[in-house]
Image (cartoon, rainbow, N blue to C red; front, side, top):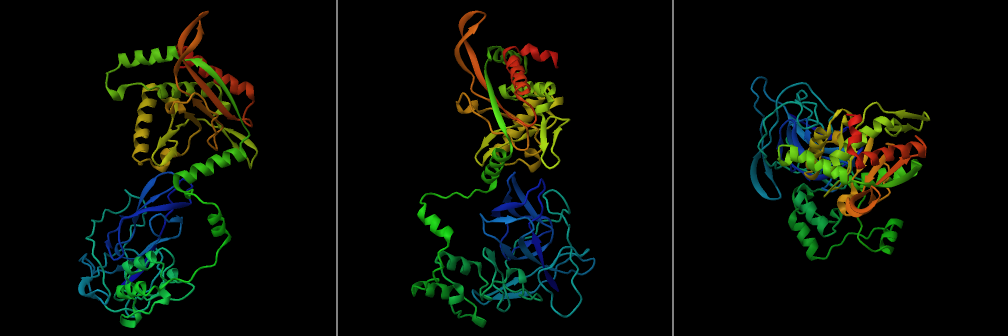
Length: 485
């Protein structure tokens, strides 16, 4: 006895409302174990492998790779069977494929335990309801440690016309003791008698409407030969009405790149910042010669390993935490509904990092209680994780102030955009030799431009200027930091 359970895209936390399917880890007809990862998705924060809390046979997938799904929408359905108490052995049944010849396969059900999760299918009308085992967990690394099951294909014993799946849904044959009815995959035009994902794919590639094709298989089942015959006969899908969006797309030639994933999140956040925050920018040139000399001395006194090297970014981050301690107005956020400025008790320092997936802002948590070495080590860890696409949502949220070192791109200055909902961002240009008046004499010194963009609601220019001047003083005379260490 089996029943079909629907697994929906879970809430991945951190306020995420949608995710893009990057890669399916299972195929329709595969047997999956409890808590086995079934799909890799990309959120606005990170890449996540999503495990299925049920064990059984995958009967449908909802969405092709590249599809963006909202939280709570169906991901896949799993046919779950019952087991004999105390044996732990799955029930099996022999099936055959009317489309591809007679091939004997088995359908497995799993374990016993408390029922969990909603059902999107129904069991056979006779006999008691099957007992379903489920961990109830949806995130990798949690829940039961059920062993990975062998992946097996499921073939149907006979075909019954099933409701047509929604766009992007891959259907499977009816399983023994499981009805083919699934209201979540109904379409407005009735069922399409297709069970093979390959047949659907072939039809999509040639723009064929499956409802216009008469199947030659049992009960009107559409086989691959039917698709190939339609292709040879030049069958075409009816032309859809041209929508305003389609007309606009035709009138605006060029490559179109969807604003989703990390790129979409960046676009939304920056647009919101410009829309909601009345920002202002001030900047100053600073002589960084002494800072670079201090860094060289620190590295010379260290162990000499690459891991122990002090980076310029780590020094600037430590300077920022000292400046925020003196000017807490900039370590804040604005509660627009309550019309209140919220000064935050801890400093969680974000830093901009460019990756292949786009711009991300990992966060060094508790930066105010870390020294230069600790901040540098955490920056290195987060940077490595960002380059490998391994940052978790927690690594990318909760920042209270952002440091943006765009000097690594060879530019001198910029006007940073505040990382909403923070109140300020410090931008750092490249450090280059320039003519500079030093101790009354013209000399060549290492000069850097520092830019501070701040939310004018949390403070006025005097506070912002004081913050920036303190940062510049620490860059020019690192010994100033000794007063706050």
